Image (cartoon, rainbow, N blue to C red; front, side, top):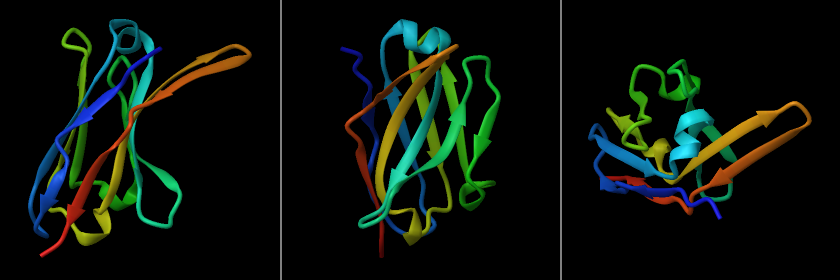
Length: 119
């Protein structure tokens, strides 16, 4: 059973910063695409940012310029640096990993960490 573990969530005021971390097994960090998803209350889970094992990144338009995703494959850790947080960034943030096989996909989720942006 692959275990992805998030940490770093909490309560922060608008304009503040948080850094989320995700740790997991070596084979995940060696080969898998990884990312952060966010699920706000009553809404679907949406991609916030993703990063390939070799480093290329993508971001949701709503977080570009404010959030930075990174990973250290040797330390088996992925981060999401979140700056200038807004109330609409509130939600549960999930660590995600996936590997695309020719005819299958292997993917894994963490249990999530709550981020609340409120004054």
